[in-house]
Length: 371
Image (cartoon, rainbow, N blue to C red; front, side, top):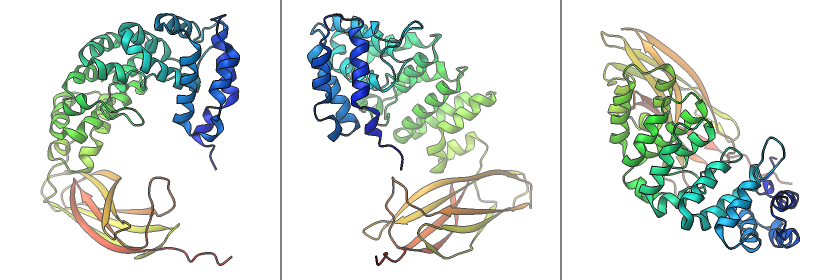
């Protein structure tokens, strides 16, 4: 079994934090910090542990944020010595998020200094929530920073629906203010940054599909292979949903001339095994067609209703009259994000976003072990 995430914050790490802060603040009470930061630590989950350590920072760093920020900045690593890094900086993010917005530019500068050693995307969001215009003006000054982590913070920290982080309701409602940031970073030399741009656009697409489809259309003409890959990744939700403009952006036209057949190899699946199926797609038209093939598994829920989940399959080019068969196995095994129920499920094949064939199958659960 993998190590629980909560164990990333542990007593030994707290001890290292204390040593590295004390090296830059002789008045820092290491023992008090250790006592407060580890009291009941083992019984808490990851974010609760981080909050406990943050509260210990509140109690032991100076009340004056300017003084506290100077200590934290001095405690970051240098080439000459170790410092606060990795998961130690999650509670530091929370500390800055709580105290920093009252010292706006200083707080953002500290997060910029922190992000090469651990992401600052969580700490930056209260600043955007407090004063979006001011925060975005400062963040926009980071777009040409030589450090890729700082550039990525500009895109990742402004994502409207960043997972695990506070949502930014103003940007969910109107993401237009961050489009210039995403445009500026779209051709960044680092894939690490470009993927963040794609994820931000995909976030926006969940609330503003037409806006993102139009944005892609405006930036795909003459795009490099790297930019085209970014734009396609940014369109993944729209493509799965069969958004007409998003499909057209990548040359996937209407599916009227495409014929699809689906054959299940096994109509009954034992949980822990897989559904085997064959898809055959034929271009019945008079012109070559780009074809994007996905499939949706409609899972049975506890109340007996069906809930679809779309999976990528394959993109191909078919000449007029050409057919292609594709064999696939879809595993039906335990995962942390879904609970499976026995009964009649459905698989549907999506050709250029349109459902083109479907079949039902039965999912069975193994008998309980009598022992």
